[in-house]
Amino acid sequence: MDSHIEDDSTDVLPCAPAPPVDIKLFVARIPKTYEENDVRKMLEDFGKVREVAIIRDRNTSAHKGCAFVRMESISQADAAIRSLNTQCVVDTSLGAVLIKYAAGEPERLGFTSLVGEAGTNEAKLFVGSIPKTCDEEYVREIFTPFGTVLDVHILKDSSNGAHKGCCFVKMAYKEQCIYAIRSLNAKRTCDGCPRPMEVRFAETKKVASSNNNNYAPVRNVPAAHAPYSSPAVPNNLNPRQVGPWKEYISPEGKPYYYNEHTEHTQWQRPPEFDAVASAAAPPQATGPPGANLFIFHIPNEWTHADLVRTFSQFGNVISARVALDRSSGRHRGFAFVSYDSPDSAIQAITHMNGFTIMGKRLKVSLKKGEESMGMMGSYSSPSPMGHSRYNNQHPIPPPLHMPGGGGPHYGHNSGGGGAYYGNTQRFTPY
Image (cartoon, rainbow, N blue to C red; front, side):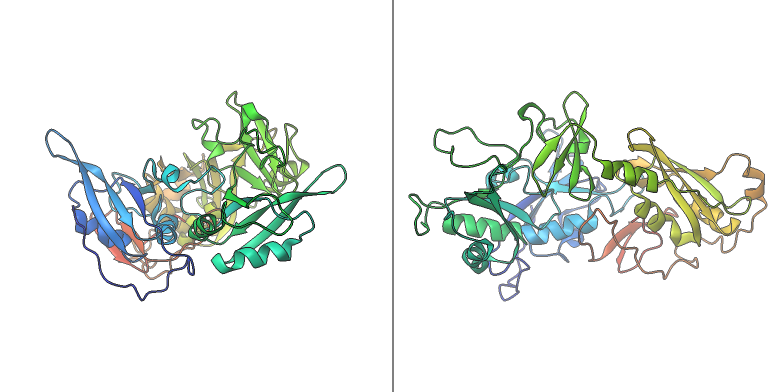
């Protein structure tokens, strides 16, 4: 185990003024030739790495292709996850590296399903036992000493608008929430309130208690179908969102919708989703023969923006479309891209066909009937990767649904050149 720690106590962490809270990460899909220092190099640009442990077979000590990494700060760990998880490719045969909170860490820190996915900075608190006469500014003054307050939402009775004596507070970093919880929960009593404040991470549903009948449920979700109630349903980990509405899937596979603004849950599909589905499939322009691609096995999380960001590196994209089901608006697993030049299409096929993104191995080919046109196209700069005209292109920013980004990119060239580290890379899905 590598437990090297540098003294950088003077550094100002993103979560300041909240003190840092360490967290253990699980890192998978790393080459079995990697040792602790190699893993450290992947992560230390994002923050202090306290220790690294390669996971090995108990009996043979064989490298299992994964590791545990403890970082000094949750905010730094989230920054690493945003930039590297499913995006850092050090070995194309393994696909993109996977980085997440190690099992048991969310529970240790008191995270609920509403705290946010690994890689998300902000988090929401539920605050109880506040004066029923107070406003949002009153609450902000209480929480500002612990960090950046992004939003305050006073809970009111839906029938008469009466103040319920509780609210939600969204803060910029999880550590700021932890700082507030440790400083305020059951320790501060507001004027006019019979008991101390209750400060905790917001939850998906009301926790049954004989003493909580003064509070409204944090989420108005049918108990049997609450978000995250069925971990086997991937949509609940990264729900589709249009405006204030999020789409979740019940254990029975039925979609239902939650409004973040009104905290209302319903089975009926909101019209906003229908509008997006219609807008997502406008009449598509096509390129000249040999310049139109069919892309199969695209990641379920991909949006139109992700498709364009990934394939625009190879030429001018004149149209792009992710195929959606007309009735449900759901992803169908394939897409179309058209360039203004057959050469761009050939470059895209050469470098993206067979490339693994987010666990999906892309199949990229010319549109049916144009294969012969593609063979006649010009193969400009067919040199090995690392010597093409795309080499100095700036990294493409992360997709819209991935907050943040930045930091170095890590990649692997399919020409066998091995891993490389830097601020640009040959091609960057996302």
